[in-house]
Length: 112
Ligand SMILES: [Zn+2]
Image 1 (cartoon, rainbow, N blue to C red):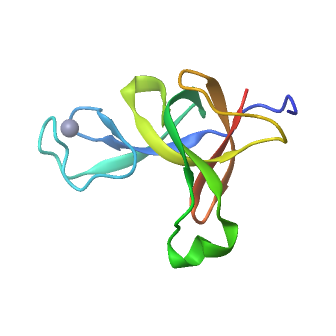
Image 2 (cartoon, rainbow, N blue to C red):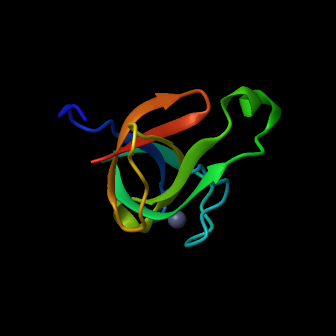
Image 3 (cartoon, protein in one colour):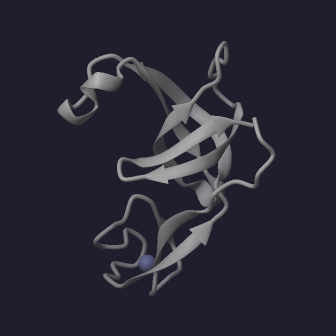
């Protein structure tokens, strides 16, 4: 893969206690606060678990099968993301990944 730096990820940061959320929360589970400010975290992490989607929501039916992973991010955050795999690449739990794009449907990651 190219050596460009990873895309950052926008998360919600609780005004009350600073806890970060992704995807956004409406109420902070730590302090009960309801005010959030956007924050950026590095778009790098490791694969927590992964799967290949073969039965997709209607909007993505023409893209199946496609790989997805739950990515473990900094600060203990986890995010479900589409994976961009090169020919022959396979996902493994614990593998390092980085965010390569943000689209309407969410973030895309690739193997590091
Ligand atoms: Zn809070």
